[in-house]
Amino acid sequence: MMCGEVIPEGRQYCLTCYRKVMEEVIGMTEEVKERTMKIKLDAGAYPPTREHSTDAGLDIRAKDIQIVPAKGHAVFHTGVHVKLPKGTAGLLVSKSGLNVKNGITSTGLIDEGYSGEIIVKLYNHSGYDYRVNMGDKITQLVIVPVLYEDVEVVNDLQMDSERGDNGIGSTGRQ
Image 1 (cartoon, rainbow, N blue to C red):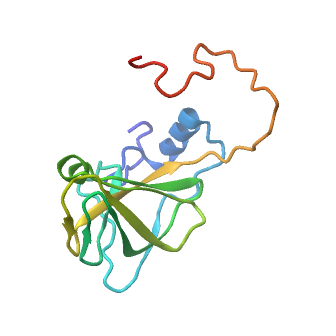
Image 2 (spheres, helix red, strand yellow):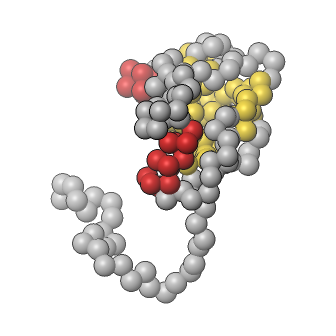
């Protein structure tokens, strides 16, 4: 797209241009050495997939049948293990259809060094039980770049901002 190199199918940039964009957008100075995520599947697990090449999230599917009770939750073992690319983390994000149509949400964080099974907790905010069948899409895995910043404890943040420490509800309805 930017330099004329061959762009792998489903990608917006070649690897060289991706590195340049990452450096510009998030200040990533360390070279992105590997963009391929490795996946190991337990027996009966479904591989993560993208419905469309431009989807940000990889769909994670249920390995078993379960009921998510009304106003309750259920934990799903997916049988999917991942090795994330260097400098990234995985966010488990609710599927919009499950959320909007059925009140089913999920959230989670997978650290770069974690190689265990992806376990998903679904929350049912609706007033009725929700049945999840084997192979149903239950969440999506979004890979994001991570900055590993040092932490320093101070007595004063010395911030010069209009917002300051005004938090929850400070810009909305009073």
